[in-house]
Amino acid sequence: MITRKELETREKQILAPYAFHSCNTRGRKYAEPEHLYRNAYDRDKGRIIYSTAFRRLEYKTQVFVNHEGGSYRTRLTHTMEVAHIAKTIAKALKLNDDLVETIALAHDLGHTPFGHAGEKVLNDFMKDHGGFEHNCHGLRVVDVLEKRTPLYEGLNLSYEVREGIIRHNTFHDHPMIGNEFDLKGFPPMEVQVVDIADEIAYDNHDVDDGLMSGHITEKQLSRVSLWNDILIDVKKKYPKITLDMKRHQVVRALIDKQVTDVISNTEKNVRDHKIKSVEDVKMCKQKMVIFSPSLQEKREQLKDFLMESLYRNYRVLRMSDKACRFLKELFCLYLEKPEQLPPNTYKKVKKDGEYRVICDYIAGMTDRYALEEYKKLFDPFEKV
Image (cartoon, rainbow, N blue to C red; front, top):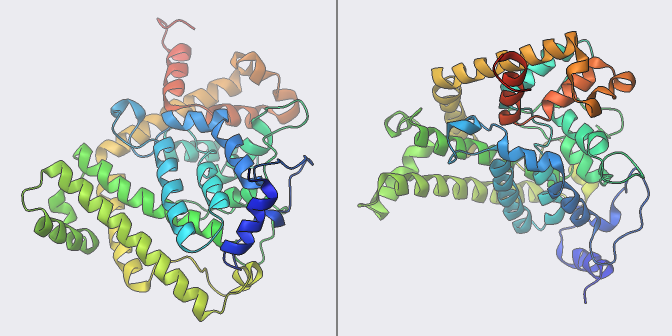
């Protein structure tokens, strides 16, 4: 039998000195007795996986709306891929992979239906009412909106997981961080690992989904050196490979190349900056977990390509614009007649105000539910 104490002892023996050890957690908002067999972050992982917000990610847009096909990534499959990549990096660097995996599983809990288009709509409505940003909302989800016990609101997660949610920072993420969290310096390396794993996942898997959808082509991608270099190697290794298999092999190799680069470059940064503790990571002049300059330059070319050829593809823009109209009309109707909100939601208006309650309600919707709600409220022939 292995107890939590023994697991914590193993962390001290195995993890790097700059890794965050679970025995050093700053704890939870509401005191709870420790579990006999599980560390703090493993307990948090379970609370996230069993949450309603986590299950809803299955029907929330990554790039392609759910009804466009079951083979494309959703927020849930993206989240699982981020967790897998992040855990691989964390293990190689001797970081706390329980903390990394838990933050990764929670990092998109605050996303709206219809991806970043939905987030923009809510932020526009909320600009004079506290704003809306999906990392901040993710923290609200785990701190307030999920309720599993009569003892307190939220999931009562540990400070480090909550910090990882609110300080998640990538090309698409620029969170508004509250006063509760220490902003002096950089976050722990475990948080940085999730940030970079998220970037690796969405860039490469958006390429995969973009090719599968026909929105981008292999000929267009030949202008991207990072893709083209690997494609040449794959063709040499497998000259008779099918188109689908070739795509899978190139994307797989792309991920492996970037993960390997992150690991080796991070090790170099740790040596160069003489990082010996969590505090050293925090006070360093730069992030530790980053790509090498040469690979980062190639990644910028890939990101520019995706922005121009996929995210601004007319079909993607049409769907995003349509989604914005749905959500705007829903928000306006609820503002005009908040009594049309479900009773359990409407009763929160007195405490939190109409704008925040409506925002919480819409942000929690899946793509499918938002479309169904729209039909119920605006289609005269639809049952309500």
